Length: 376
Image 1 (cartoon, rainbow, N blue to C red):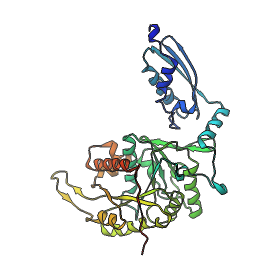
Image 2: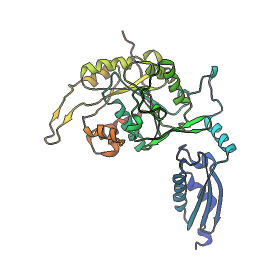
Image 3: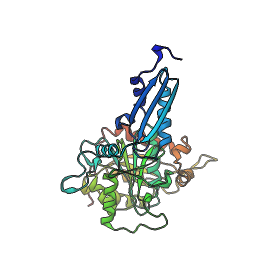
């Protein structure tokens, strides 16, 4: 039995709980007001925690609370009861999280990332054509940023060719919460995709207005919470989605993915220039499939040529963020839902991706960017 001076206090227990996030909403349970009852009897702590989305993560929430309290000096045992949040409190919480201004002037849904006071750095990952590894780079960069301690969201804006759910190993359907939707989680990232809402066996045949509305809902009607980075995986090319996203998030930065081949670089240049008139800025270029390193001899083979990444960066008046070598495991990890930066963090491609992520972090607070040059 603990002595009187060893008995934990309510303040000590609550301080320990400040580190516990509610799994689905991704915010501290104390901030969300989920601690409903706390009783300390000697070294025994009994606590009731409210669950805002019943059944979504009861066991995970209960275990996280239990582990946090066990670390408090003087605690001998912990009894945790997870109960559904009463509907009135649930609606009040949803309203508070949504904010007091759900719509901008004219009834247009308010997009938090487009506001001047937003602390989230939005990065649109674009490419001129398919097959350059844009989505796998998006997935790996997102996970690399999360592994470095950042709060990361991934918006799969490739409505027709969505692949982020598979690449991040995420399945299921987002849960409604009030008048919002809660994103799913994969490898420490919050994820939203049209793939969560449609039949995977049927193609998405949408035109401009429907695409625009889908993006608007993903940005305004999803509870993303506090994010350091939001990565948007754009479809290849210069179509409706890229234009709509640039209009909705004019303060976003774009990263353009290309291969070393100069023909691919010319196509990627058009993808970068499409946002020039919206004010979106370019944060850099990533060159994928830069070189193949023979595993037996270490000899380098530049299968897809060379110089495309550097040339593209020069023409967009930005920098080459990194050149990623060819690695079959990058594709294998995407197919298996385990990004290479997790599967083999020591792989050369993983190290380049981690370096790019670190570079984005150091520039986040001071990333001024450059306006993209208009096409002549």
